[in-house]
Length: 505
Image (cartoon, rainbow, N blue to C red; front, top):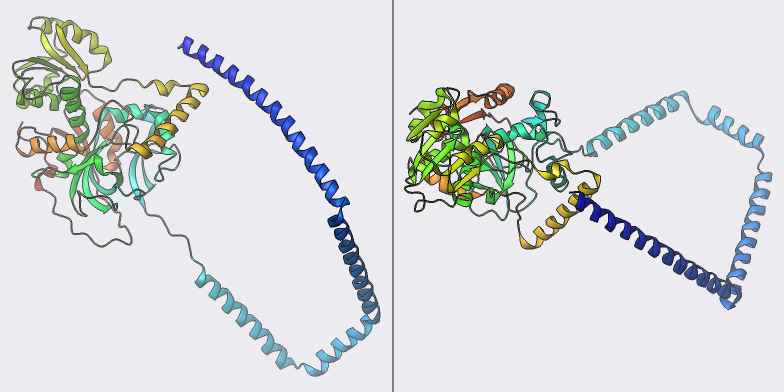
């Protein structure tokens, strides 16, 4: 980093020298142009055209003098006493008391009519609909930043490939806790400048996934219709989903699997996308390459761990999972062949008594990475699913300015070549379609721990941050948003299983 700052300093010094040289040259050139224009104006004024202009100005000045003299003579002829006597005679002889009353009433009625007409023609600015949302009001941690507000502006479709979704349920993820402490703030601040649905840096709407109903469609949307039940996941830098309505790109949305309610569906998109990325893109595992491998899921009761256990078991691996004693029945029901209980005895001794693993998925954090390496085969692989720190969050003024310029360049390139990614994890409808098919055929079971209302969002976040959480914590929305200029939509009835948790366990 020091070397990078040294080179940047050298480049800035060189740029300053060049700018100074250009500035001096520019002043010399500008002075030459000013001198040439002055000489040209002097020659023109001394020539025939200048003489014509001087004659015209002299004639105009003489005319103004004559007008002033005539006005002075006319004023002298008018006697103020004569005017006063004529006005008093008119008021006393030609205007009666009744005439004055009627004149005054007419003036008042006319004035009142004019005011009312003006008010009726005045167009008041439209009142933008507002919605409830769970937001972060500052980057000072969960205790000081979390809030539930009712005055967030309802987003609108501004691009032809966007969809307006009425949120029925959303989930709380560990990334939301990090966002409350400033995770991704620099990139989010830069991208929000180009988002018409975001006013300033705060509040930041939390939530990374949701399930709901399509309210409106952009002109270019082809795969959905108004009233479709959908689910979606968005990356950390995007506006969140923990609100009554959300606008997202069509490529991030997929049809909600049948047979499950909105609350159950909302538990899977973000965690499922993270798990799919870890299995398929990072570990290069699929139904053909997974069979026969020994896989350890460290943190098997986490939202991502629950999906990883089921995918690994589905594709033929021997699965070992670590979890708290309370979560043991859940992890076993998900398909783990072996369970290592944390908090009871020495975890490393328990893992050392088992054969080393081909692949280890670490969902517990960076601190557990070294421990995972100890029990992985020499040619094995350790994949960490938790989000790493972002370097741009620590940029100062100089690097921050360069980073902002880089963001602008990428956005300009995006307008020509299509969408671009701002992270290593790809969110999109293709992954959600795969997960949806597995949910519909019973291969993957979403795990819902508890369901809260928006008013209890603080309790929901505290539960997610505790060691008692198993699977996903859900926040259920009952939307009050009624958009104008929209045809009424008949929504399909919510599945009766939407209020159930993972009862099969």
